[in-house]
Image (cartoon, rainbow, N blue to C red):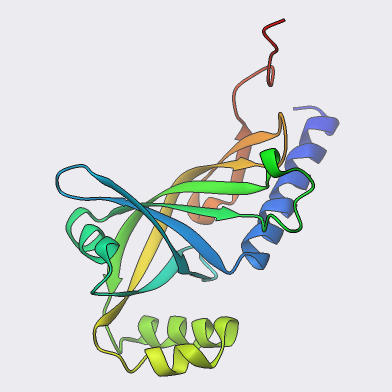
Amino acid sequence: MDTKEKEELDWALREFEELRRSVRSCILATTSTKGFPLSSYAPVFLDEDGDFFVYVSAMAKHYAHLRKSGLASVSLIEDETVAEELFARKRVTTDCEAEMVERDSQKWKAVMDGFEKRHGATVGYLKGLVDFDLFRLRPNEGRLVLGFGKAYRVFGKGLTEISYLGAGGHRSGK
């Protein structure tokens, strides 16, 4: 890899970190046992290991999907009000393994404290509702898009590794 490629990949990782730091909710995609897709959103917290956490009501359809399949897709998407180009919003979509975090465990307490710091007093109220559960969504790999022709594969523990996706960028039919 030459210096220019390394600089670009380093830049992409910094942009990815900024996206993870700034986006406060995720698009959560799950499937039913019959294979029907469901897309929704949830406030999200990311821990130091790069895992996503969502606190989900048992009344939500995706709650049952997470419990039964143990799989989800998570997308973080740049706010459209700050995006330079609506068609090329910065975003990452990851394949995740989902598991429920045991209520009142050390991990549950640490993550919920982080959730409350990130999202405010509402979390303090929601922590006491026993029909909500905390799910860890551990990413396996994902696709990071930072603009037209700027797509990357992110992978490794905590999605800390990056490579180019595809070759040659977009091509016109003309």
